[in-house]
Image (cartoon, rainbow, N blue to C red; front, side, top):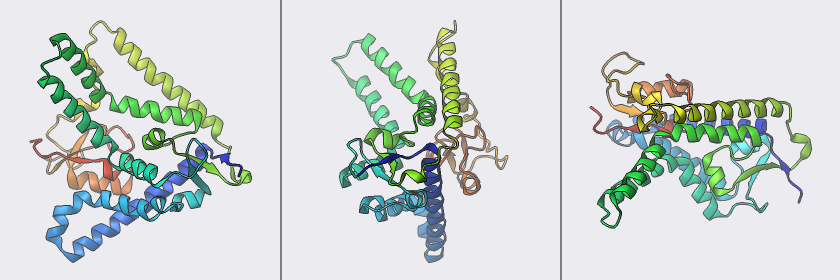
Length: 280
């Protein structure tokens, strides 16, 4: 069977639709669990985004069915070999899609501890490895932006989970392709990639360059003890992937209206925010 590459506009419509359905499912779960038992709800409410995502993709992708977004855009998932992804690949995609960033953070922390405890590594080797880990910690935002730029340029792998598993989107009917904005997206991706690389090179050429210079300005803002949304002391400190910290209730309310960080406008999904246990 002949496949036709899905265009950027098709993929964006698909993912926006899926995010809307998952968000609606989260809202329904919040309301249902709050009605059933308010005490239990407060204990598990942080897990509701995870439950919603697993439920949604278990009923669709893991059952070899189109998601509602894929059906809406008229696209399907295939691997690099032009085959339908196996259940194992779909499970790996789901794990990376939902918990890829937390797993990445934990892997870096574990590697850091292992390096510090190692007796076989020299002091210089430890220093170099620890610096590399610190750079990876501080540059997650840059890596994500580079990935988004490459997506706008090539039209492949909207999510990092798609890139790691090799899952891409195709159309079954060529007349459904939407090429109207492909050139604009391609130009946007190139400009964005150039700007990111320019900032990295500029930082590396700076005379005062060190690891602290590589930290994004978001980490500086994150040190504040006040929530910019309610202008009060942070209650239930919660961090976004871009490093900004808000009250748990404040950021949840904000993300119910728009899926962006209120400070830097970086895209934020409700299942990506992290509750900080010992921040204060």
